[in-house]
Amino acid sequence: MDWEAARISIWLALFTALVLLAPAVWLARWLAITPWRGRPLVEALITLPLLLPPTVIGFYLLSAFGTGSPFGQWLADSIGLKLVFTFEGLLLASVLINLPFMAQPVQRAFAAIPNSVREAAWVSGLSVWRTLWRVELPLAWPGIIAGFALTFAHTLGEFGVVLMVGGSIAGETKTISIAIYDRVQAFDNTAAAIMSLALLAFSLIAIAVVFYVGQRERRALLDR
Amino acid sequence: MAALNVTLEQSAPIPLAVQLDCEAGELVALVGPSGSGKTTILRAIAGLVHPQSGRIQAGGITWLDTERGVRQAPQARRVGLVFQSYALFPHLSALQNVALVTGERGSAPRARELIARVHLAGLEDRRPAALSGGQQQRVALARALAHDPVVLLLDEPFSAVDQATRQTLYRELAELRRNLSVPIVLVTHDLLEARMLADRMVILDRGETLQQGTPGHILSRPRNARVAKLLGIQNHFEGVFESAAQGATWGTLHWGTTRGGLTVRVLDKRRIDDGARVSWVIAGEHLQLRASEASAPDWVDCVLEDALTLGEITRCKARTVAAPRDQLIVNVPTNTLREAALHPGDPVQVRIEPHGVHIMPARSASKARSATPDSEA
Image 1 (cartoon, each protein chain N blue to C red):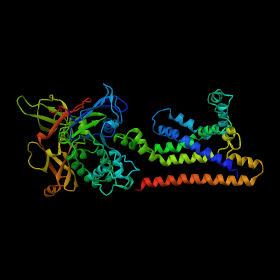
Image 2 (tube, each protein chain N blue to C red; image 1 turned 180 degrees about the vertical axis):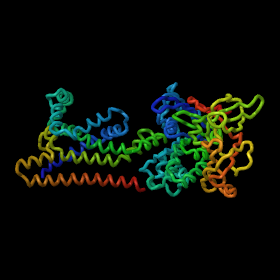
Image 3 (tube, rainbow over the protein chains, first blue to last red; image 1 turned 45 degrees about the horizontal axis):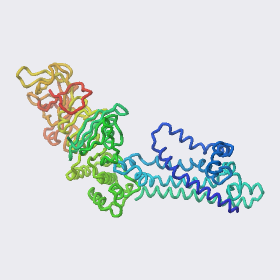
């Protein structure tokens, strides 16, 4: 078991989910209620990472972040930030490709809140902010939990983009899924099997927790 | 100026040409078919939709004045709105639904008092899903009152409950009104409900106010044929008006589209031209039915076509002998009909009281915006 890779994987998954949380909730709520006609285009852009091969996304990110690109050069010169083959770069790539995993369940949760409930709060004198905090977020909570857990689990298992953008630098960008690949390449099937099983169990537990919380919240809404 | 004044004009998405006002303590019912803009008007008052042009003033404060660029947010308007679906916060208990609006934490005495006021004491901790439709409606009402509204708006609040609960809620609304002196606007498509609860009715059609007035007045004196049709007034006919002779009071109404058929005596108020095609109604309380006797003024010979017993009242259809296409609907106490031993097919006579006949222009004036003056013969 490569504990260092496991640690990096867990940190990456946790940071990705945390960084994504606020912007994804904002974006998802906007998508859920906006009457704007350009909405499908935004939804398509968000969904794109689900459909494109990870190598394609990795290639574009690499091209955009690398010191060969004006953006990458500017980042390196002005704030000394290198995004290729670093944990920070890996985090940024991970945030971008996980947007659909976080935003979609949250958007569905916001869309399921009847508009009249939101309006009832406004008419009752609750500000837009207070309505969000006291009415909308508690009702969208199961979707937010689901988005968080899906992002977490998906990041743990991400391989292609991580390899393209992060490389496989031990202690910096080598995650558990890459460690498994390394072990298989080295014919160390025992280690690969242990890590695979750990990843499987962890993902299963994460998803089960999502469904459990979702079910409990639904029940809580229906019963007293 | 009334406690609530509303003027709305717009051409799209729903055309509106509305003028209505409501005094403090008064209940005005907006009545009209679906799509007539009733709910849109309520939402405009609450600030949830913004008409192209209009003015809304409530409690001396201007909420909307498109000319002067005034447009207050819903939060600033102090409206109590009971939604048709109630729109309760499903994750909060009945008490919390109200306390969120009163801004109280902990034991929330004011929210508790409001819950008790709508007869829900003991059910404070239940969530909406664990309450019946009638109980949810009461929570919605308590929440609307929690805001100390200067205007109370009710959007078909009784449509989702059963008949028995509805009767109870009607009574409770009447009770509530005794201690609440704010204008109340009720949206309903149920004419009986409007008649029972409202001090005044506003008849709407395609976003336009056709007539305002007390339910009794509108039902016996609909402004035009369209209003009569919308209200589903049963005894609604066409006719040709013949003015009274110089100095005489009584004109003649020819029943049907030409002269020469059945005639009815009517008061001539010199407002309708001689020979004008008209539409006319007669309210049920101005009709009497009896077994056939010798002919007499104002009594029309008919044949009893159908008698449908509805408990204490029997709804009789009487077809006129002279013009068998026309039939009058007369409600008769069931025991009266039984004593008279009248059955379908029997000859009967129906008395049309001349004072009860209300004559309207045959074609509705489409841009009739305000309530007065009513057109009468």
